[in-house]
Structures are given as C-alpha cells and as structure tokens.
Image (tube, rainbow, N blue to C red; front, side, top):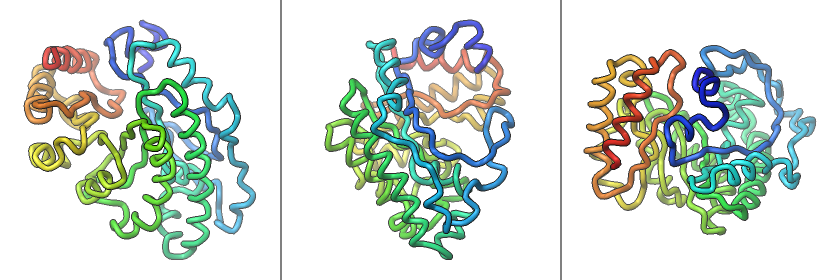
Length: 291
C-alpha cells in the first residue's frame, strides 16, 4: 500500500510488520494485453492475441537472460534472514494477459491444439526460469494460477488435467528436482482440485479463503500433506469488520489451523479500502498467536 511505502520505504512489510516471508518476482516481460487499473488491480480491456492463428507473432521473453533474476538476487541479499518465495505465474495467468479468460475458455473447445501450443511455450519458459531460480538461495517456488471462482473450478477437473496441470507441472517438477518446496496459489473454491495439488507435489496452498472452504475439514484431511499459506478472510472481515472482529477472526483461524503446525499465517491481497487499524490489528493478533 502506498501509505506504508511512503512512511517506511521499500521493504515496508519487513520494516513495519517484521514479516517472515518476502515474495519476490521474475523480471519476465511476457506479451501483455491493454489494461486499465481500478482499485489497485489491472483489468484486461481486450485480448492482445485476437486469434490463436497468430501465436508465432508473439515475442516471448528469454529466461536465460540474467536480468530476469535481478530482483530475486536483490531480495536475497537484502533479506538474508527471511524466507524468500519466488512468485511464479502459471500458464492461465500468463495466457490471460495475452488472450483473456473468456477467449481461453472458448479456445478449449474451438482450438485445443493451438491453445496447448501457447501453454507449452509459456510453460517451457517458466520451467527454465524455475530451474535457474532454484539454483539461487531461495526458500520456495510459489506458483500462482487462479483456476477457480466462488462456486468452484473454472473448468472441470478432467479439463484442468488436460489443459492446465501438465503445463504448470513443468516449473513444479523443476523445483522438486532441485529439492525446493512448491506452494500453490488460487483464489476461489478449489476443494475439488486439492487432491490433485497433493499428487503434483505441492506443499502448501494459498489462500484457502475461509468463506469458501471448510477449514476444520481441510485440517483433518490434509494435515501433514498440505500446509496453508494464508487462510485469513480478506473479503469480508479484514476490510469491513471492526478491529476486535479482525482480532477474533485471527484467533479463531489459528485455533483451527495452527495446532500441530502446517500454517504460514498470512492473507492474500487486502483491498485498498481496508482501514489501517484493521491491518495493524490483524498483524498484532497474528504475532500474539505465533509467540
């Protein structure tokens, strides 16, 4: 948030809140559609790639360029005592910036082979980037791909198994080969895909939004198989509740997921409208629970 960066400077999450995790990024300039920014989020206005017949016209980034890893190296050097998670876009995320989700969902039926060609080009680059990042002093690879919405998966599980998971497995497998744990992000109700995440070798899941998932059931079934990176409600309680409601929510979440380990206490993106006192109440209560 701009107010924190203005007050504390670069790295304010560590400076202001003593965060244990630093998320860092590849400098991979994939082709991108025109966007507009609203409420801190960039929204695609029209697809850059109007037709999959034009795939060969895309100028893809070079994962062998040392500059791709410059921010990762900078953060490793700046925060030697913190966990370094390398945020890694999945194929749907990158393809959305090129083709846009609604077109991709139609491409599954109209042009499946060409869509797989696009995903293949993206995943080959991400696999190379992941392998090189895992040679650095990082803690985890953090694959980010929204495969779900409030009601469930964006595609059926068999379609994800055909069109998405094989391509995302390339960077996942590169990290696993290097002995680096992999975390997975997807907003939405991901319940039907969790067993597949375990099979893919994912070690932790973000954010596991509490209003969309049964957290006690998740703990019973997946404790020891999947950790949770997140679990706090950034949709209702944290932005709209009182500070005391935020504190109570943090305590309740820790009581459900924290016992016996397996919780990296966090949230996903917090709306810009979130009152500062709610953010500070959240962090203070997280510290009380942890220590």
